[in-house]
Every structure is written in C-alpha cells, then in structure tokens.
Image 1 (tube, rainbow, N blue to C red):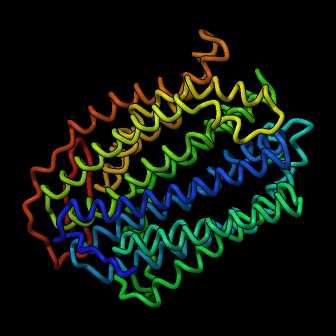
Image 2 (tube, rainbow, N blue to C red):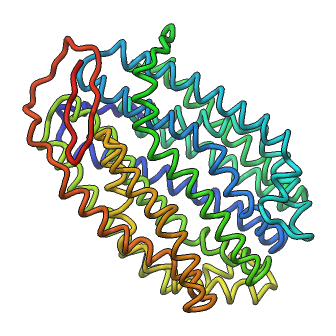
Length: 466
C-alpha cells in the first residue's frame, strides 16, 4: 500500500503508470458499481426505474458542479505550490478547498429538499416515472456531503502521491455498494429507495477511509488555520471554471437528451439511452482515469519549470487514451446486443433500441480520448480558457447544436449521431489550441521565495510570479 511518488524526480513512465493504473482501476470499480446499480434497478424495478435514475443525472451534475470547480481549482493550485516548494500555501489551499466543498454540498442538499417537487417536474418525468424519481432523490440527497467530500479527498490523496491508497478506498466503497444493491434492491425489494441508500452509504465509507490517509500517512497536505485571501480563491475559481461549466453543461445536455428522447420515444427511449450510457461508461471512465494521471505530474512540474517532463506526461497520456478508445469501440460493436440485454428483463423494445443506439454512438470513442486528455492537460497548466473551450465544445455548444439539427435531418438516428459528430468537431479545436500552446519560457529554475504562481493564458501559458 505504501507507494509514494516523487513527481519532480522519479521517471515519468514510472509516475504515469503508477498514477494511471490506480486511477483506471478506481474509475473501473466505480463504473462497475454503477453498472451493477443499473442492473438491479433494471431487473427488479423495471424500465421506468431505469428511466427515473437517468432523469436524475442532469440535476446531480449541476448540483456538484460548484464543488468540482473548487476541487479542481484547489488541487491544481496546491500541486503547483508544492512543485514550487511553498508548502504553507499548499496546506492553506487544501484547507480552504475542503471548507468550501463542505459548505457547497450542504447547500445543495438544502436546496434540493426545498424545491424537490419543482425539480421532479422540471426534469421531465411523466406519470409513470414521477413517483420513482421523487423517491430516488429523497433518499439520495442526504448523502451529497459524502459524495462531494469523497471526490475532493480522493483528488488530494492522489495529488499527494498515494494513488494506490486512493483506489483501495474507492474499491472498498464500491464493493459495499454492490453488496447493498444485492441486499436492498434484489433481496429485500426496497426499489429505488434501496438503490439510493446503497450508493450513499458506499460513498460515506469511501469518504471516511480517505480521511484516514491524512492521519496515518506522512502527507504534504495539512489542515491549517484557513486564510481566505481573495487572490488565491480567485485563481482557484478561474482555473476550476472550465470544470464547473463542463460539469454543469454535461448535466444540461443530459437534460436536453432526456427531453428530446422523452418527446420522440417516451420512457422506453430514455431507458434505452440509460443502458447505452451504462455500457459505454467503463471505456469512458478508463479514459478519464488516464486524464487524472496527467494532472498531478503536469501541475507539479509546471511549478518546478520542467518542460521536458510536462511534454512526456502528455505524450504518454495521448497514446494510452487513443488505444483505449479504439479497443472500446471494437468491444461495443462486437458485444452491443448482450450488453444491452444485461440491463433489461422481458423488455425486447428497450434492449433492441439500446443495441441500435450503441452502433451509432460508439465511433465517439475513436477521438474522445484526445479531447478529454487535452482538456485535463490545459487545466493542469492553469490554462482555464483553453480547457473551457474544449470542455464546452464537447459538453454544451457543439453537442446542443447537433441534438437540435441532426434529428431534423436523420430522424431519431440523429440523436445518437450527436456524440460522435461532437467529438470530431471538438478534436479540430483541441489540436488547434495545443498548437498555440508553448512552454519555451520554462527554464527549470524554481523561484522558491515568491508568494504565489499564477498562470496567464493568452495563447501560451506563462509563469506570472508575484
């Protein structure tokens, strides 16, 4: 379990593999837990239950968006400060980030309960899914603090150089989720109430295990008396803004998907789309795991002004993500029918439609990895504007336009073509932005005595040391 990496001196390949494998394992474990959740809901509650859970997703994405902004912005800030040897600044950024995430998650829970009926109606539930959606949200909302703090703590544990411990905590929580799904949904017949409680308790366990890291290990992140100075928070907000908008946009696009599908195909179409998301989630989250392996090394070495190490991390991540995308494209096309039927019982219409959707959706994997990696790379360099452009292209702007235009041209097939078309268009944008990015100014010298490192981006990143 004791596997700590020196981000500034250990071989890049060793660090990348050491971070990527646990990150991928963690993402796969979480996606498997989500798939098992969908399996029990689809089998024991039915297509309406599966549709209700999918209708919840846009709301949850919007609710966590602010917390994600602080976690990404705060962890990038602290990693750069660690690379520049400003340990007190890193500890203060860590403390402030956790306080802000806790406050935001409690606020999200309160708002969710105050406007629960209105939210259920807004999410587009029909007569069959309304009571199911209300039940699922009612029992899930109390666990928002666990969800968001587990995400934040996991990010800091990995940035602290302990990726294996991180994946162990996530894996134990996911194993509990699977066990509780089996008992609460499959054996005790608690329906969506059981699914929500199982997920929430699993996240709570992961959060508690992650907290232990900061007690038993020699960590770079210490809780200190917080100093909420505006410049630090502004930099955190700026750098995390791309993730905020990407997360919120993902939820808004999910809302748009659900609305369009519900209007054209009804609950059966929403259930089929949910099945596709479950089937695609493993490949997608594996790529996100690779992206997570980029951030710590790039941010630390940017603070340490090591250009050659930054570019080495990027090359490894791009090669790996492209290979994963190709493999998952092949898997989806070879096994789309059994994957679709895994989540349904005596529902040929849902399974048949999901099988058709997978074939049109799967080409997105051929280029998705490059876009995800480059967005993470820009964020790690504090290039929030560039990261935001990539993220908004694939999660809001291009995808929304595609969802509006393509169904008018190709009918229902146009809905499923929106994802690969969006990833293709975004690829051109991502590569153009990468070409504009230069790191020639990095000279390998660290300014230890300065207070803060800020990155200003107008085509190329630079260190603005104050």
